[in-house]
Length: 356
Length: 99
View 1 (cartoon, each protein chain N blue to C red):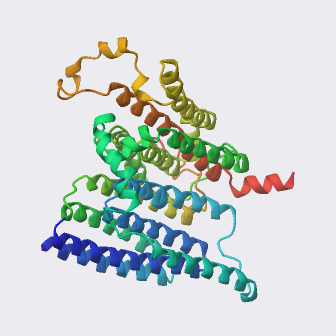
View 2: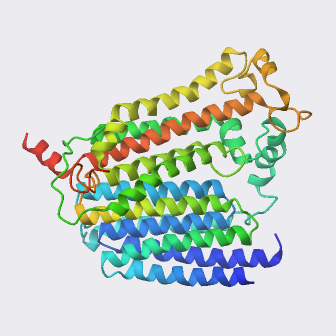
View 3: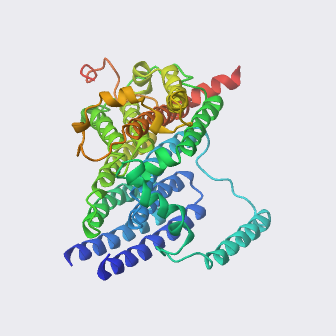
């Protein structure tokens, strides 16, 4: 980058980090949980913008869709089930935790002095394994986006673990809140004047567009920022928009909670199944070079994509495509199940449960 | 140069939004601040994509615009109905025939 651009990005860094500090302090300070949720959503917008300044669009994507989108909605569902104010704690009970937090914070600031400079080419992260990935990804995997190559292929086993963690989160939330609506969800008599025609028409047009965008993010992950995680959350946001506008009863009629949780588990099966196919074909677990047998690979016309003279990595290509599909299924179904759990458990349902 | 001025202007506007979001006083001020902060973020990311020569940043700006819309609907629904589950219009009602 040229010098003026570097200066501009330095000034942006300072401005955005100052905003983060102010917002974090305000979140700690405020007593109202609703204000805290709003401030947290602004916080994650700022931190995602800051990640863009750091030139990490894949991470910024995830922060944007998860931090600013899903978690705000889920937190709103959570304070509907609890109370809106934080409990006031006497200062005497805050002394020891405060000292501990201060001590850990001080240690972290002290440890910061030992970190390498930002973008230092000689730092361990840039000089050993990171550099090796950058040099070999194009030759080994063939995916232009190195992040996808590392996430899907080099570290495919880690990503499988992350997908299983998401499924575990789905099961955990569902065991606490129920897999789906507990209440009958019969719509109450509408108050006069509540037409919301504009909102309904807009939502009806936006839901397919958001899903289309999710598919773009899914299949564009090889080339640019994006992939299964981000696409899964975006697809779930489309379903949540439908539930918000047309009601949870309509949405659960279209996508039953049983289907959502089955898809969440099926995604992990797809991901692990790709690995097992690789073993059956004589490679290691998730070794995509062995995904396609030579007979199948010979059937693919060489000129289908790009330069026919260059070596193709069809195994890697289809392997990453298949595992990203598994990730998409697990992530979107998990987000939908969590939303069903929070939104379907209304106050009435809890009161009825307590009376039993 | 114009781009840098635009980015600086957006940063100033975002700082003002943060002041409103932190000070309140009512929740509606905060919602309005958070919503327009999201819009400013979309613009800032689009400008940054131009400034750093990364047109792919526009994808992320698009996601922000979509997410911001859905979050705002969830917030307004929270205030109006205290429920995320109920429909916004009653099916079979006078305006529910097409819904």
